[in-house]
Amino acid sequence: MTGYPTATRWGFPVTGAALAILFLFPLLWSGWASVRTGTGFGLENYDRLFTSDHGIRPYHLVNSVTVSALTVGGTLLVATLGGYAFGRFRFPGRDLLFLLTLAILMVPYATILIALYVLLGWIGLEDSLVGLSLVLIMFQLPFSVFMMRNSFEAVPRELEESAQVDGAGSVGVLLRVLLPAVRPGLVTVALFAFLTSWSEFFAPLILLNSTDRFTATLAVVNMRTASHGSIDYAALEAGVVFMAVPCLLLFAFLQRSYVRGFASGAVKG
Image 1: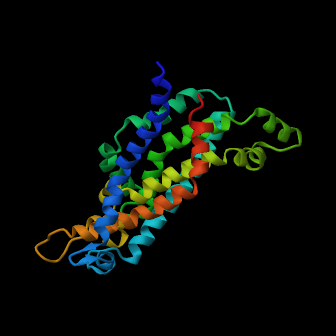
Image 2: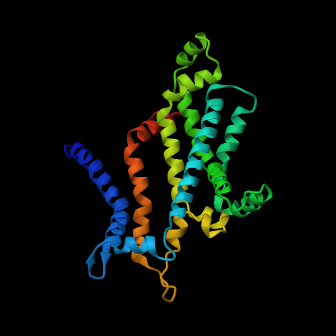
Image 3: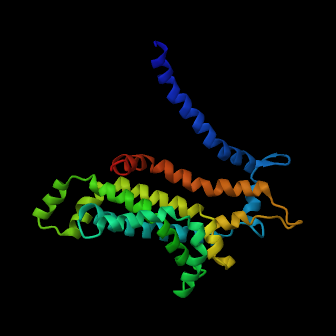
């Protein structure tokens, strides 16, 4: 039995290191392959990524940034208001409505993209970045509303009551008291919304038809040489690294708030 504490003490770090290597290996391999050339190492693959006829153009990046910004902004707005309502108010059908919101998680979004494409056509948003953003927002809502509801419920009601005694209404309490208190939850929701919208491939593939509205993800997938339609794998690896860098930097910058958001909000209830 004397060896049990030692095994426990070393088991978790070793397991964590093994999992980290397992998850980092594909990215490290892509980084190595993206700078490997026929004669050594260099940035030729990145040059082809941005100069090839089928590579990334500035408007692809603008489209990706636009979709990401709209998705993050829309998700934060709806999830904050929804989480505030579910977490701080009692009204008839609250629990049922919350369950219906979570039920979206049980629907594989790929199975309803065609129906959503038709719906966007009815409202005049087919083949548009706004329509794509609305679809991405919809599929972010279950997790986001769940996170924000739990984040609001974790805030002591005494803070809210004190603000109400000072004459603040519901909107004032939300803006001045609750939003600063649930900042980790907001960061977590925003980070997930950005990661999803920035790297999403299938929804833009179905919902966007015009090449000038393609996102950078579609441009990376379409990277092909002009010779026999073969795929330029080295340039593709450069595209993978290029698309991953903003996600890695953002996650590293917001890591502390992200972890606090899960600890204070998602774990509750």
